[in-house]
Amino acid sequence: MGITEYIDLLFTDYTLQTVTLGTAVLGALCGMLGSFAVLRKQSLLGDAISHAALPGIAIAFLITETKNSNALLIGALISGLIGAFWIRGIVKNTHLKSDTALGLILSLFFGFGMLLLTFIQKMPNANQAGLNKYLFGQAATLVSSDVWTMCFIAGLSLLVLLVFWKEFKLLLFDADYAKSLGFNIKFLDVLITFFIVLCIVIGLQAVGVVLMSAMLLAPAAAARQWTNSLGVMVLLAAIFGSFSGVLGTAISASSSNLSTGPVIVLIAAVFVLFSFVFSPKRGLLFREIRYWNNRNDLQLHKTLAFMYNIAKTHKNKEHPHTVKILNNFQGFTKKSLQKLEDREYIKVNKSMWSLTEKGFDKASNLYNQLENNE
Image 1 (cartoon, rainbow, N blue to C red):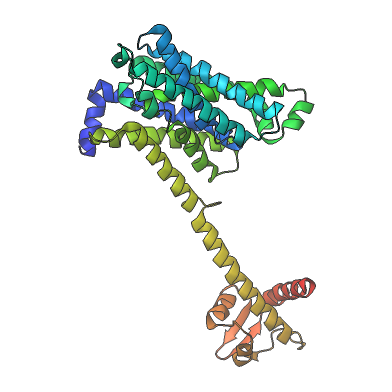
Image 2 (image 1 turned 60 degrees about the horizontal axis):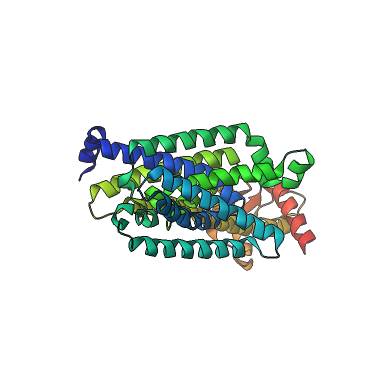
């Protein structure tokens, strides 16, 4: 399917519209809330909660004995919240660290969930369950009610973030200071954790238990490379997440053999990789460029300091000196001489050079700095 055909189909096919809107909203929501998980150094929280939601889905089906999406999601929410607060309880009341607690809860709940799924498969109405889609996701099963639920949760999450923005910001970067100001740290922690769990639960149907953690963290990790501002990071993460959902759905729809959830996660991973390489502040490419520029500047400064050491013995600062004497300085090149002339630090006349007033002052400072460092 070509891009033109896909765009035409997007305006005419109701199912494709529903899935595209749903994954876009889910991606934006995951980006917003995932930013707080990343900054709180709880990157594994999404993985633990998504796996912890699995037994809740299975228990909800065993109770209702029907494939009711709302009942299954409520079961997942309750199970996910229990897992989240067990993690908090383990960290608070024992000497175990958060990564150990996350690993324990993930393994315990997921193992229990798989045990229940095995039991359900042997039931007469096992075919009605369709619970396997919650393992790996099946975005094509999204209906308008699911999308409306996502939109409502996204709107509510945005409202809560705006209302408690200052409090959440203090909680992220200086919890002790926030507590000294009289803010209820425990309430804020529970509130943001609740919405992260809620975000994970509503994304299980589209992305699945296994990949939901990547959907939560990848947009935020990509956005973190571009800015130091929390507001900008949340906005960029929402944009990256939304585009991942839309592009992933488009690629999946263009091929009948590709699952939507994994493709969305791969697109999000591309955003992360691109950000790690090309972001101006933290990107590997620009870091390497800055390294070479600093190295070249250091070589120029050393050359200029050497020239100053020669020129300072003369009363006339602009007294000409032959270029040949620079050959004794290790590392000197004609290219460095040209760069110094371009910066108006020296003047070059055929085989002679002389320091300018600007170059003399600059070199004087550099020479003094080099002597002090030695």
